[in-house]
Amino acid sequence: MFFRTVIVYVLLLLVLRLMGKRQIGELQPSELVTTLLLSEIAAQPVIDDNIPISYGIVPVAVVIALEVIASFAVTKCPRLKKIFIGKPSVLINRGKLDIGEMSKVRITAEELLSELRLQGFGDIRDVYYAVMEENGKLSVIPKASASPSTKADVGAGAKENGMARAIVVEGKINDENLTALGKDRAWLYKQIKARNTALEDIFLMTCGDSGETGLLTKGKIKK
Image (tube, rainbow, N blue to C red; front, side):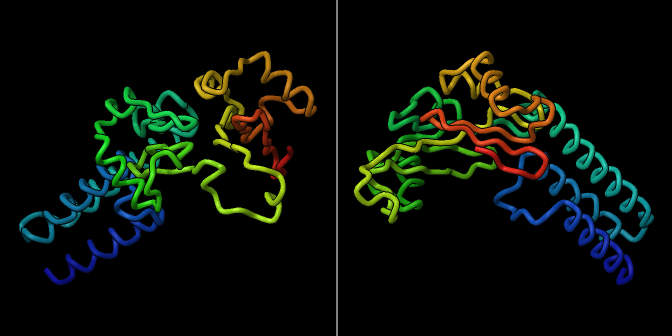
């Protein structure tokens, strides 16, 4: 039993190292399922010495292989990402509360206010964007009037920078984010052409509310 426990412990330690450094509260749905399965599968040969140790090792290897394959597939197919991981939900969009989106993620107004207080915002009117990320964490972008001032801001007046959205990821266009920004593919192709870059060469292209774009291609960031 001692040696079985040591073997399973080392195996799970290596598996969790392979999965990455996410904390339990930050696991994606597929990662959480994998973690739960691993704990159940690994416990069987440890508890019952009549179960061969291979009955624990082989299923663990299969589960982690499925997780790696799913993670790879998600990066290559955005549609699979919506199925396995989901997508961020914008609860406060440019200072306006989206009640419909709150209903979709099943969060009440009291819960939202509580989350904002945990982020250091006592007044919802100070929030420009509040986004429920895929892992359930709330990201908050304050209004310019509620943001700490920097040297560059002195005398320039408050300006809403908004939130940068990914409009191209690894050569694939995100039409949903383009629509949210009030842009279309014609505008995007014009921006790409102006930078003398091909769509398939783009690793990441973002656009903010003000229309400012950022481009990352082959290890270089362009503006």
